[in-house]
Image 1 (tube, rainbow, N blue to C red):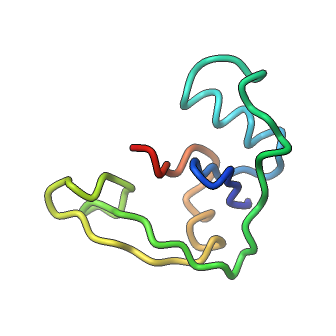
Image 2: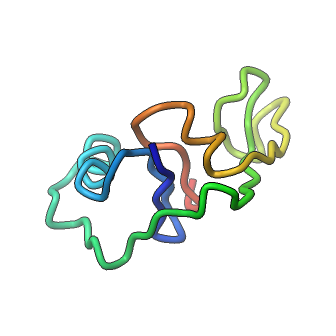
Image 3: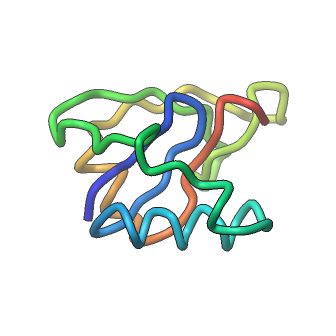
Length: 89
C-alpha cells in the first residue's frame, strides 16, 4: 500500500487507479473529478503529521483531545485502503 496525495487529500491505495476509486467512494461524485496528473505517491519514508483523536483516527484540530501524530507515509499506509485525511476539513 502507498499513500497518495494531491497536496490536499490523502488516500491509501495499491496504485493510482485504486486511489481514484477510494477517493470517489469517500468524496462522492464521479471518477472524472479525479485528475491522475494531480496525484503522486509519497516516498514511504516521508513523515506526515496528522491531527488524530484519542483512538488514533484522523480528526480536525478543533476536536476534543486532538493531537498531532507524526508517522511515515509507510506507517500511515498500514491503515489499509481508503481515504485518510484532507487539509480542507
